[in-house]
Image 1 (cartoon, rainbow, N blue to C red):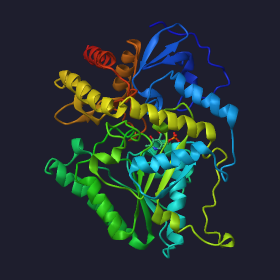
Image 2: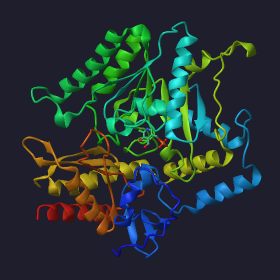
Image 3: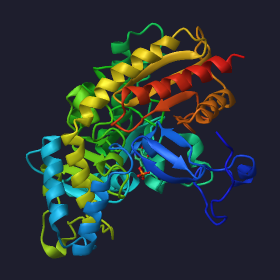
Image 4: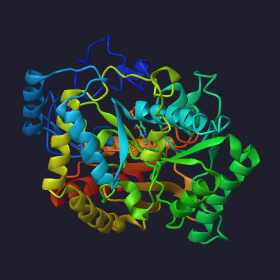
Length: 450
Ligand SMILES: Cc1ncc(COP(=O)(O)O)c(C=O)c1O
């Protein structure tokens, strides 16, 4: 693929980018996208094997979504979030129905970070107004990413992302997540699940249960390296949360809306949370929209007289935005109509089957994941499970890109490490496109040994 000329505007400050190296490492400038492909100025088609930032679940270039947005903009482009509009009301009901909550309430924001930040504020205010004023600490897990605001970054368990931004928010603690591939060799996977749940319980006990407000977790850690928990882990976590009156916040920002081969990630383990947060796949990236969904029990603690200050005192200018909510509704209709969740599950089997062709490769430590949220852990020594150097993992990614396939790896998860290749293509993926991804990885792995 031809090297592109740099035509991104000089004034654009891109995230996660060292701009000094831009002269040698020029950005991809994308002009168009359709289905699973992005198209650059030179007309090269790049397979978007990460669905943008794992959000374009229904694929690129859906005219239906553009039409819904246009119609809604012409009719009602904006309304103050304390007022209501049809699509916001309809979407909130639809989401409750999809999660299987008879009753509950949905608070809309515009990004996953805001959805989690909102959840943190809700849990603290909830406990304060439920007779537990000291319950304010929030526990999360190492390796997990929960957002870019000061509080959600504090909850994030990835040290390098925090450098330069301290002091962070007080009142946050981290516990280790299950990581079956790197568990202690004397433990079975199930024992490892129990061990990790026990770390969580011990942390509550040591901190004092009367001080712990909530636990936030993704059903399976995504950006932190595709960590699928043992089957007993989520049920154990639920039990511990119930025992100590700790609210369970399930971050479904990545795993929601079909990504893992079920409509929602937590469905794999049949465990319900007290609060769910959603973003990305909610509108497949066509509009910025996110939601914090709470059980009715939580919402009820916010009832009171007008002068009591018991209501939720946060406003987001774009919360429940008419255009974003109408696009989200149509996006969900597409996911359901085209059975994209089933396709994600089917493609998981297909891709894993093909990736197994490389299981003997000296760099392939483990192939794992669910649905279209898949990872390959790269190691330089299979016996010792030594993580592959970041530069070598990068070279594999760059090689895939040269072959027209854009993949990711976990970044800034553990200082100095970034050895897990990540695939999260649009859920419309077909076998021929899956073959392109697998073939590119296969070639890159082969050449990495030369
Ligand atoms: C699990 C998880 N939670 C929250 C967020 C934050 O979402 P946003 O970037 O929309 O603020 C992300 C973003 O990647 C995420 O992966």
